[in-house]
Length: 296
Image (cartoon, one colour):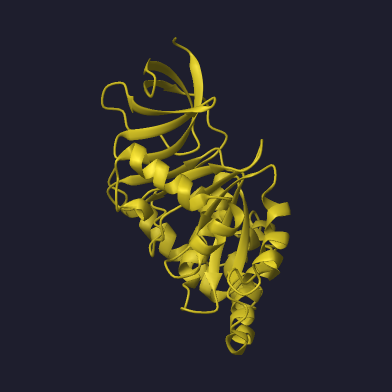
């Protein structure tokens, strides 16, 4: 029957796994289209008991993707929030955190930072100091220890996840998998089933997948990555995606100020006075540069 609706719960190449009522369908798209993302609500045509064809993507509320100079990579659609997972050890990248925050702001999603492995107490003061920059901007920082205090971690995070569609992102080694296993009952089993359906075998960690937890709650796991390119964001989107720039926009001497080296720039004045962190402004400069290099 045509016109059926389903949710894409995993994607591998041009093959998609779609939750359709109580069944999971292995789906392909019509023609060569491959711009389907995990979390997309799609209309599909079932062609056999466990297979189907995706006919169309319904309108997305949000879309999160990474991009480099040449191409973009969809991460997930219809998200309401981003959980950026960092840890006391191994070291995490401030660049990745800030880029993820910019992506969330530009995409209309809330962002939270989850600090894992807080049981490594000797490293806590320094890490807290680094994360204070983001807390001061209004991004909540939640401290947990998935391994040593799993119940407390669940009690902290589950209320924030309920009724939301949340993607967990972070570099490898931050304990994201441990958190997913805590928050999603039988995540390992579900992953094996998804992998078998998509025939990805041992590549289980290289694709994004969605777990439904209760009626309106989705938790999306993404592969660990070190780079978060934002070449697709225009300069106008970028200046608005830095929260701390907001109060200063419109106060520069020139109405078309780029906030890079212009005289009378309110943003640069705030960097000078320490009200805006130099590291954040340096990232803004870098992102504006990347945006101008886009080739697609």
